[in-house]
Length: 421
Image (cartoon, rainbow, N blue to C red; front, side):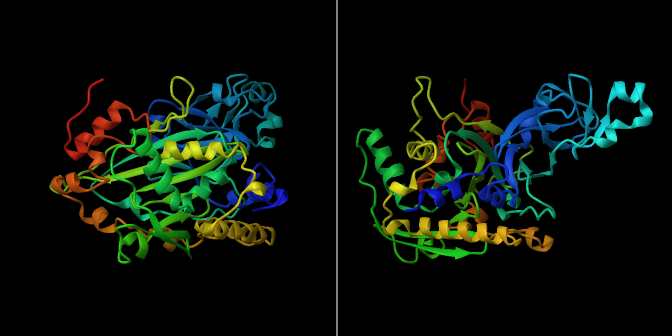
């Protein structure tokens, strides 16, 4: 367990905090690009800062302070122009770098003063990759944005799911290196919700953890598996510092503030054999609910079950009162690495997995237990026999709330019947 002081050090991520300074050294996914098919301005809170993400009429994205430099009006109620975002209060116009381009009255009444040259709105770099908008909120020089290999796979359907989870980022991320919870939370608990029907879930027999360049992997053997199983030889990836990679999907836990986390899920499914080539024209983004119409936590889907576990630990988990066991070796490993990263940043060095070489970042491969399926695909007959892909023929198992139009776009890609209503 951790002392109260060490727990606070790892969990506080606001401006000027040590852990906030560490996490700001990495590019973070903050939105879906397709969200801006129907909007131009989105208020967003990240790392305890209130910001505005926008797409101007020239197609450029910007991430700037939510308050105008003039009289602190809310820019989320402004509008975008050919270049930049304009405040609705007095018309000041800013570009994506935070430069003030126009101050209509000042430019007319006192042009020689060039007051706009003295104004700079806080702004952060943004880039697009994998259908997502990414932000970098740390110091210069800006590191490379890793182009993870799955973003480049052909013949697949991708969707992005966003949810806001009311708890601290760290208890979300610690879930990424906790193999045994799958047996109990996702198998046993799901079975109980079905009335105890179905076979008893396979028990874990052994687990192991290892470090690699871009995070940590956990490996496991459950009843009925052999040591040659990819779940033991390859493992799942706890992606550094706040991600999770399962072979065909990513999850990121992006801090909103100390007490709230933005869950960003990127999900890819290869089309069945015989439906190639498939090219997806637009990657949909949707928002997954965390509670039902009665205010109860949704427990029917995999990530919703995770959310219940995370928030059940409290808004910020009290790690002075926990008792770690042998299955928690990965938890201890990532906490040690976070403290190493704190020391590295304090000494002026990069923390783990920051990429500076453009050639390295151009295509970054990760361990993938589903590599053969991701590459070669399965026939529909094989889908019907596969325990996980069989579920994907009728439902999106990861999160509740998938819109009908997203399912129908997915179904059209896979060759499944559409839904109505």
